[in-house]
View 1: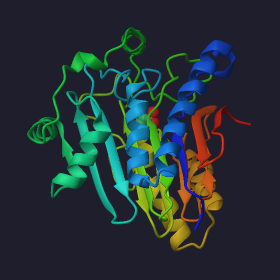
View 2 (view 1 turned 135 degrees about the vertical axis):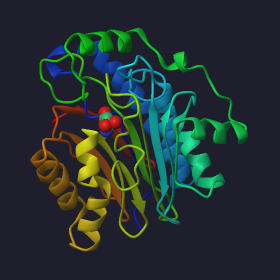
View 3 (view 1 turned 90 degrees about the vertical axis):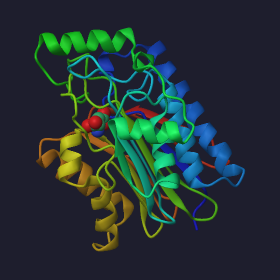
Length: 312
Ligand code: ASP
């Protein structure tokens, strides 16, 4: 069995390198390091991979630098619709919420769906009612609003564009992303979690890959845990996270080969961009992306966190 390890991402829509100031870069690095360290601490204390990814994603949701929870993007209607998913590789149980606007930490709601409902995915008002019945307070949707996101919506609407958050070298709006975490614990269990505000100026009701098991999030102790960020529609059509697991299970590929095949070949072939974070059952880590940058980090228990934003 590999050593316990956690990997996280803050989205593949990193700020264009030429526009990133050293101060901004330091803010991102500090935020990502703190989250990796929090995950490492849980794993070091014998905590489960499931608890480590849930807490890492909760912390990323709390951080307004990333497009999940506070700092989530606006829909075309000027509202917020958040999606999240969590999956336990030991039991293959999963929980998810989509199109929610009154849940402060969608990843915690996803975990409630997994542990306290017979279902996998709850949407909109049904999800709000379920978590409220579970004792989770509902919040005012304006909690998620930040002036930066409002400006971003206004620019996107002025240009009549749905901003995909990714990969437009000269477009300052495409600088934020989804968040996610994958982990392997000391027992050899894998888990994954992903959470997002989606895309700026998306149509109300649009759901992306993030809350869909096998598209934006997947974990199976038999092989791998994966969390995705990128052009959601393409990650849905390729079942990107599950495809990595299938290439390993049925194709005999290594973690690196399977991730490269999906991120560098299959996603771009359909016009998508983005990346994944993945950990296999041996504790190998892969963080490939085909965009200019992806906020990312990982740390084995006992080691210092490794943080990156751009291609090395
Ligand atoms: N995949 C997310 C979505 O399509 C967006 C992102 O990763 O930034 O909702």
